[in-house]
Amino acid sequence: MSKTIIALDFSTKDEVLAFLQQFSEPVYVKIGMELTYGSGLEIIREVQKMGHKIFLDLKLHDIPNTVKGGMKNLAKLGVDIVNVHAAGGIEMMKAAMQGLEEGAAGGKRPKCIAITILTSITKDMMNEELGIPGEVQDTAIRYALNAKAAGLDGVVCSVHEAKAIHEACGSDFLTVTPGIRLATDSVNDQKRVATPAYAKEQGCDMIVVGRSITKSADPAKTYREIEEAMN
Image 1: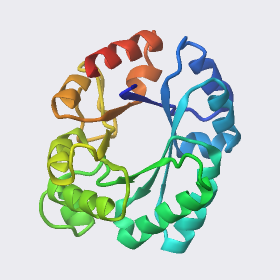
Image 2 (image 1 turned 180 degrees about the horizontal axis):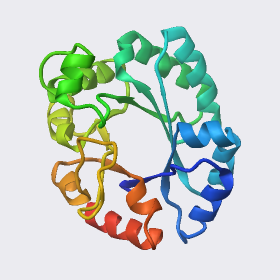
Image 3 (image 1 turned 90 degrees about the horizontal axis):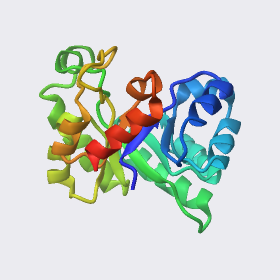
Image 4 (image 1 turned 90 degrees about the vertical axis):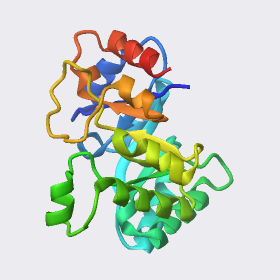
């Protein structure tokens, strides 16, 4: 099983298709807001035709009924993973699961994971701007426990919280970790980052890697090296 998800941080369909043509085997990709808003949902079908698995990263966060309706439609797309913000609360996350079950209509339901604390947020930002006291890890664990109580499959968290979340929620509770950088890369706008080797050491189930692969001179080679490090 692939443990590396490639973040397709492109704006156009042509950029995505040209990038994916460099891979001889199916890979796991993340389609986020930039690409979805730029190319529409048709890009999902194009990527699926190429045999790739999709994490549709749209981070739903709204009142429960709205999230349920959104997830009911997303379930019909046949993607592999979708997500919500855990900050929306247990009732909202339960509604997301209900929408997915209804939309899948007895077919394969996408896995649903919840965003805990974004990797761009530091402890000071969480405490002072968001008004949440304590350590980032404590809030991430609380959000993860809420996601588990709502019946979700796992969470998005930083590498630095993955081990504690597994201890709190069980080894089968999926941890998907962005903020992955190679040792030679810039961290850009993310604050809580780590290398693939450290992610493996911390027990992360899947990692999300963007610019380290998409900006590489040889994306397929870099992807294989990261996969080998994770497996």
